[in-house]
Image 1 (tube, helix red, strand yellow):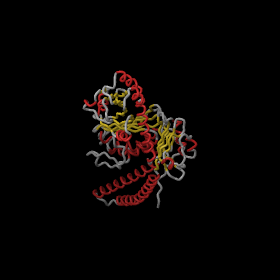
Image 2 (image 1 turned 90 degrees about the horizontal axis):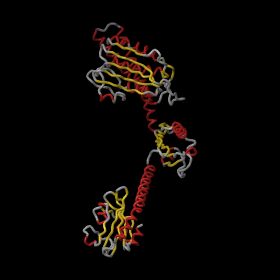
Image 3 (image 1 turned 90 degrees about the vertical axis):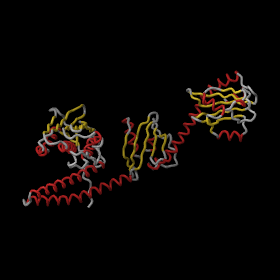
Image 4 (image 1 turned 135 degrees about the horizontal axis):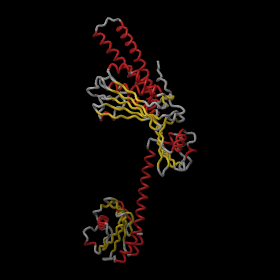
Length: 490
């Protein structure tokens, strides 16, 4: 294009410069001394420099018959008398400037201008395509550099289930020979012996992303995330979590051992406290001291039990699904709280429709959820308060609500109540015992059942905790870890 313009107009030099934001970079030049052109091409010109810069700024061509009279002119080619610069535009944006120079004054007439104008329309498309191609190439090189050096394994699978990309970390993670080119090969062939194959097949069948832990042949564990990408296929990102799994195992063993060692002396303390109480030799003050001992030991036992429960949940537990009669279960749980309700002169109302169907759940864990929510409602409601427990069916789900007219929870605290070890601290609740783990355990157990939990609360008006459980959740064939107690090492 530039060569045609040079010959048609009888110019002695021509340049094409790309415009990028606030500067120009010379791309092609004719009529230059090679050493001079090499110097010019390496420079980035600000748009405030030269006639070409002015054209790039203003977006309209300039035909300068006598460059010596133009204050913006910058000499690149000696003996230049006239210059014609034309902007190449795309979508109202100047992307390049084409410039012609001549040793003759007033060298460019209307015929030259019309020719360059027609040429520029086609040249703008070509320059823009070249620019986009160059940007794409640079971005691809940058991406490839990142993927080569990233610690995570990255695998891209096309819509035809052929491999588009396998980075170095993926080769190492899945023990693939590093010197092979896997691009274009069938994913099933390359990963035929890998646990990743099953994950991808299930994701494709479900039509959605999956996150899972994969055990690889040498005993390591990978955390793999598989997501669909429009027009691309599937992207797998995996990283080695073996060290974290080992640390988690050590943590659980330490927790189990420590809990075991703590429970024994607590049982001894409780036993002797009971014996002292049974002697009937304590005055009122002594009896109060023994009551405090009992309370402290019970609190410590609850903390240990909650810690063990949280450890089991984090390790992965199997739920023992059975058909649960929710009415019978709620009646049983409510009966267990009768002494506390009577002590605080509180009322608790159960509302369950007579045709409430059985729910498929782990009865022990569901009882634990209800015990915690109702127990909290009693603890955080002043004497003579009221608690309302309701259950109903909504489609394929059971909705269960525990509502009280107690102290309530501030908006700031509501977003944290399900966090581990978080406790609401107010003047009314400061003296109430708690481990800060109960609601975290409840949330985990609800989600293990495939349900959701939430709350609404207003300070001074009370709180409503509500959770939903599927009536008949899909049950896995087997779980990762049994629901047995954490093993204790002696």
